[in-house]
Amino acid sequence: MDLFEYQGKQFFSNFDIPVSAGDVVTTVDGAIAVAERIGRWPVVVKAQVQVGGRGKAGGIKLANDLDEVRQYASDIIGMDIKGHTVERVWIEEASDIAEEYYASFTLDRSRKQHLGMLSAQGGVEIEAVAETDPDAIAKIWIDPVEGLDEATARAWVQAAKLNPEATDGAVDILLKLYRAYVEGDADLVEINPLILKPTGEVHALDAKVTLDNNAAFRHEWADYEATQERDEREQAAHEKGLQYVGLDGSVGIIANGAGLAMSTLDVVNQAGGKPANFLDIGGGANADVMAGALEVINNDPAVRSIFINIFGGITRGEEVANGIVEALNRVQINSPIVIRLDGTNADEGRAILQPHLSDALQMQPTMLDAARTAVALAGNG
Image (cartoon, rainbow, N blue to C red; front, side, top):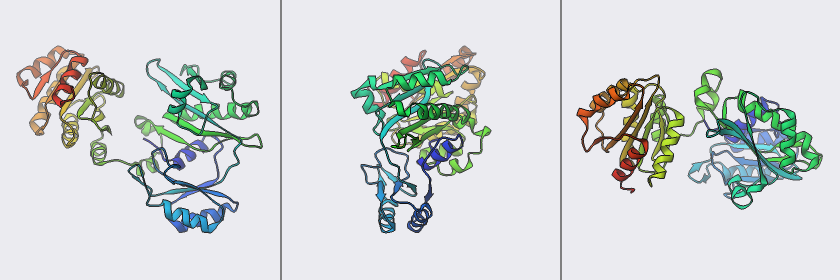
């Protein structure tokens, strides 16, 4: 679940991370009212879209008076930024900036540890920094059991070569940001830029947060959920309770478990194809779930083949196979399907599927073999 900047700042505030005073509005009159309430100039008018490049697109403006607030809010509300229509703007008090840094936490699945990244080069895309000057990014890996302590955070700040004046403030924010990441059940928390003010204060000027949908039962996320941006495919999947992200390829993907789904995307790319989606059906691969997944993918006109990648754990192989067979009786599929079934009772599952195999329904023994077949059927290799 990706949050807008204003929601990310609200999220950060819950963990005492300092952010700029401001408010979100949907109208020009609302923008003027917030600017008047702030009462100090200049203020920043910022488009709220879940995509980068707002500034270059004209979606971030510095206003010195109410006339400029009116003009900029009028220009930005309704603006199209990389296919995203601006419906909200965030009005905040402008900050004096001495230096800009970058800070984030996410999960490194390969190491099974949390990854922290910190750089003295903030305010630009971290991918650009990684490409042009990878040594400018200081990384740490954190054992989830041990967590992040102050000594480690302080050494990390020094390794990133932040201004010594920023050390205490940066350490304080990094500890709070890590707590927000863990206790807030986030997949990603990012501050870019994290700023040092001329006064010596360190401050989060932006907020990028992705929350783990699977942890929603532990939180009150209804307001975040209400503003999620979804295309037709994503909305249909959401209504069926499926974890789905639409992509721009031609190989539809169904997998059980987010980790396996991510690996499936990688192996399709490795085989020379392009995934059309990320679809995680979780632990339940019964007929209703499988039929819903196939229906969502089948309704995507870009899909030319479907790769079902299931590793049975708690869900047994014969249950998965019966679910697939029953689902195929319910949904008229337009694209050929390739199945890889492994794990608990996989032999029984494959035996159930065997009589149903054809050019339109194929089965392969390994994930790579299945990916190669699905890519070939899609015409990508």
